[in-house]
Length: 639
Image (cartoon, rainbow, N blue to C red; front, side, top):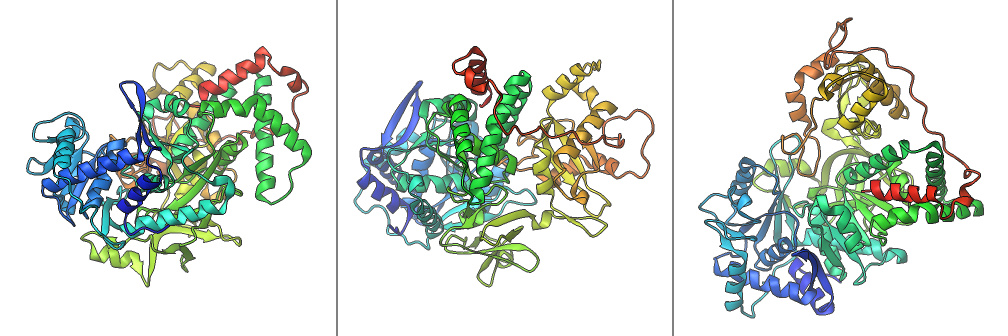
């Protein structure tokens, strides 16, 4: 079904799914539902409230709030008037908020509460969702005013080419750019995703499904996912916060979810860490279960039949181990859409083995956002799948990925030169480097501008190397460097708890984590970990020297974007001395201080062996105390 604008999509769903729950949220400790008809009524009331405040077609309205039901209501109310939504991450500091408000020419703003209201200029019309901060209209007042002034001329008859949103890029390398997305852009992406779902009977979703929402709605992926979910009559449950995600998963029992790789990385690291601390027998049992799942994935991805023995093994592993993991995820989770950053192949295969299929996709804000996604029947971890049915992908001579389709933006706001550079001959130049496999799957190498060119002439994709580095349990964050140098280096932030445990195990009398960072034995050990996890890479891609970052890179410190991508220029500027140490000609011979040690790394540690058959007594463990402990272990560490 095709729609002319986004509000008409929601109105259609209100007609088709009227009494079905559209939104589920916690209020006073209890989960409450808002039906599709009630959701539409809220949109109508808020829209007419905005109209009484003078909001007209083409006006820009900023939205500064965390993900919550009112965000969606404010968005669709704005769009129904023909106005333009300008989403702003609530974590952005006041100066960045001021830039977006000024650049977009915003006429009004929704804010979550008084804490966000202080970021808004006094002369800008502001509505607060919670409370009644000074200088703000309240959400309740806006709705009541709208109900008193409602009319039948609603929503406005706007077309697909009408501007719907200015979405400002997070700006890892420069000033944020306002991406102009029309109603047709976002609807085209919804339609492309609908076609993908309709192609696979097992992936059908509808009113019986629940989607858990916790990513920022300021991110276009979550916003497009909302439009798709609303078009299918799905119930969208809103996590109270990231901190309550584990509880929210169990209480809402979602069947689908959108997430970023960092979520899976943290779960994977916790599971691996906890399993490593258990007895040798429990480790063998867990490795046996995962190894069987990985083998099933490999055979399935190659289109080969699954042996009956492996099927029996996986049934047992699922009953003994993996079903308990899924219970910790709510018990109903079928598919997770992953985007925003590369997903490590090992992590994708790990979750597949556990019975949770991660469908990795690729896209950009400029493409509304999805361009490609892995099909549910044959995900290929390491690739980002095939193009949606209404998207074309091509590879330029220099390896840059080009995209064409109705989901591609109309341009950058107030940046005609940037628009001309990005849109050439009908193709959007993504700035990413990649290749298409013979079966039409896209493999991403790195950002075009991020490629490191070594003095030897070799090109290195830092993102690929970083994805391998963070597989080491001791490494939390990695920034790979080496442009115009002889070799690749890396700045690493280590897990403080793991480092302190390592020191205790090796009887190193250090009082503080910071002191340990200058210990030569720690350097040798971490260098060994680096060698181990980067062994699959080409020799010139592997870091030859490393330096330790003194603290975690965070959004609050300005080193991460709101979508948790590292702002490499900021990091390189702040830690210029560490980078210079990496490439110092003369290395010290005395005991090192932070960032000065560079001994020869030890041989790579052997990878854990895969167990091809179960331990001899695994069948006898049904209901045993040992297996019960393993179940408890998984439930504790998975979230």
